[in-house]
Amino acid sequence: MPEGPTIVYYIQKIKHLEGTTVLEAGGYAEADRSGTTNVKLRKISSHGKNFIFEFDGFFFTVHLGLFGSMLVNEEKKVNASFYLKFREEKINFYVSRVKRYEGKPEDFFDSRTDLLHNDFDEKLIYSEIRRLHQNKLVGDVLMDQNIFAGSGNIIRNEALFRSKIHPESIISAIPAQRLKQLITVTKEYTYEFLSLTGTGKIKKEAKIYGKSTCPEHGTEIKIIHPGKVKRKTYVCTKCQKIYHPK
DNA sequence: ATCATTGTTATAGC
DNA sequence: CGCTATAACAATGA
Image 1 (cartoon, chains in turn brown, red, purple):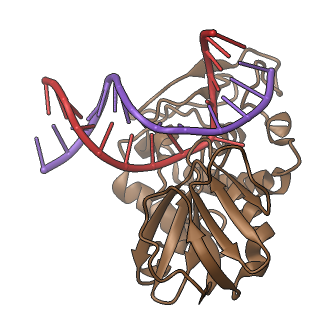
Image 2: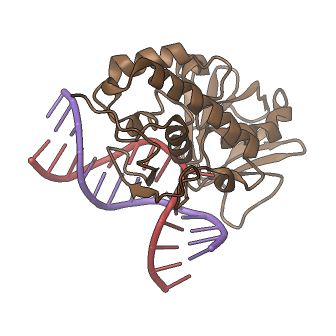
């Protein structure tokens, strides 16, 4: 079950297939797969929660949604929604959505917004949030894939707690230094998530997600479903300050 | 068996 | 048109 780091983790397992020949692409996903027989897979990369499989002139994205997964050289009981077959290996995707694009990934995705990309640009993200989302709840902005590509519900909860900001704070009321810090902390926690992926320790190491008491004060953690993104949100009102315009 | 879940998109309705 | 609410999709483990 995937947030951005999950995709990066999976890619580590298949990166060696970059530059090799795809014998066949298949699966029940309704994507145009013309020109994918006996062709070189030029590049395997990601943007946010999307895998990117690049061929000459076109590429596919694979998105795992909430329940998707990837297996290499193994099959599940259910049919794969997408697979790439190589001479000796096979990548299987389950419960995933596939989209074909004509052109190059950089024409569609801006790596400066990808939390796990070296190009991630904290200053750009800060100015985009100020430019576009002044009246929004910070909890919603942290789930916006156009701003924080790869962020998900766990990352959002952890980043807000670690930054001591209440998810229902309004962007315009958050002081510059606090908002900049939130962006930095979000990126840092995303890498922590990546380092824990595959160990089964993500929820265990979380400070607030899935917890009932605050690790700082032992006080009760509240569960709310705020804003537009009505996902489960954990809050310690003692630690997390709410910023509202006067 | 029932419930919840690391996500997104299409559609209806105001 | 723009916003929001709702449904829809589907696998797995507690």
